[in-house]
Image 1 (cartoon, rainbow, N blue to C red):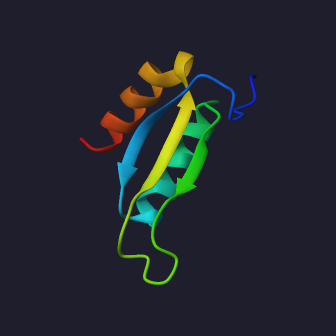
Image 2: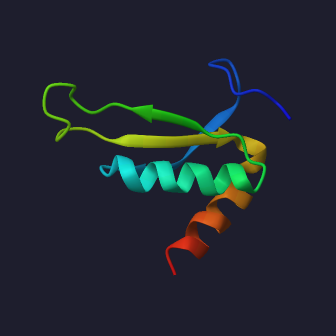
Length: 73
């Protein structure tokens, strides 16, 4: 499995404001063997402004989106 590094070809598959939901999705993607990077760009003082992101390697984008969409159905 490839390692996600800053130099890797990565894409965002989730952008939201709810860290709990993002972490659940991250765990689900990882259970399917997809390596996921979690990023939190929210304001550290309030956690009310900004977003959390899930990123995957570009080669896993389509499968990750399928999994995320099936979770939201």
